[in-house]
Image (cartoon, rainbow, N blue to C red; front, side, top):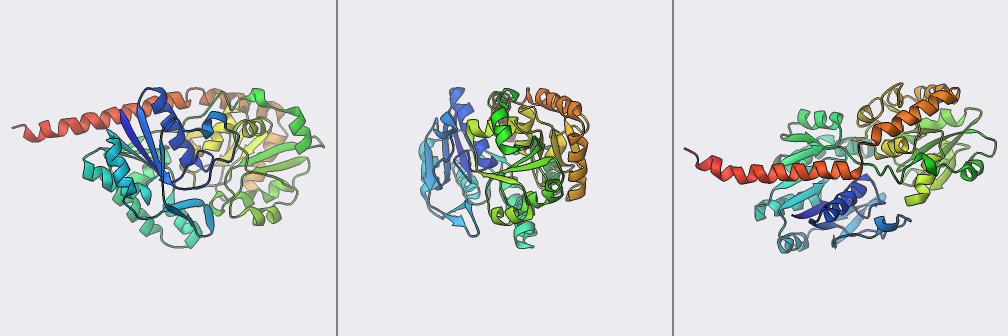
Length: 382
């Protein structure tokens, strides 16, 4: 099967959209299919991800510009290259990863070629418009509807995201979760030397991993930083980095880490906290669980599918800094509870490897192709 993956960002260490697109391409290649990735031109891989930094398939980069104020995000420039590359690849399916700008053009090109398209919803762009601009949420949803209504199938990463899409009038919504590398992210990577370096006084290590951006609400960890015997560790970079260094006194900022080094950090945490309430999935929650670390997250969005309250972690009221603080206090005083939650979290993700999730995606492709093939017969039936 020939599949063209049109993604708004790449390489895999840029963000969750790029990572998922990469894992999709790699799984297709391993299963003997013929993937091609089309993406806005952007930075070279920066991590130590090993084979994750080398594409198993052609990657075509179209001209782009960085988004003003947020250079990690690239916006593709208008041009004919995408349509030409798609036509030359002769795909059986066009896979649109979080389509908005380049993905919308990919949808139009797929329609002209008569090729079915699967659109993967991964980013709450309406929420981003509200957070960054204070307006424009309606415009963003009109764009999302235009792209996803044209798709043969829309894949949502969580039940909350699926409800949101259906509520905004998008048809043919199916659930497709994200996978996790349960071998790379593993409790065995816990590193006592790293723990001593991060918390020389033997403090409880509470970690956040992700973009340092307004929608992630990392500043809500300020009361956690003030707890005695607790060390907050922040991994990532983004437009809020400088502001957060001021807002979180005493926290250790490690910058962007990837690959084996990131896995070592995850496994060396005592508690993982993700305060952002706008996650359509939240990949880092899965990576923490695979690492055997209990999770604290808001009871909103993707974490509702991932964190089982009082079994794999704690769900708290969204936007509530004191609720995060109380959750950390609960886990700080319960070492046995942390171990039980971490073990249960690890077990919960073992059936969600990228291989399992990739095979689910192949079934979605097969269903879409079968539905397309049945249309002419249905139309000609008496």
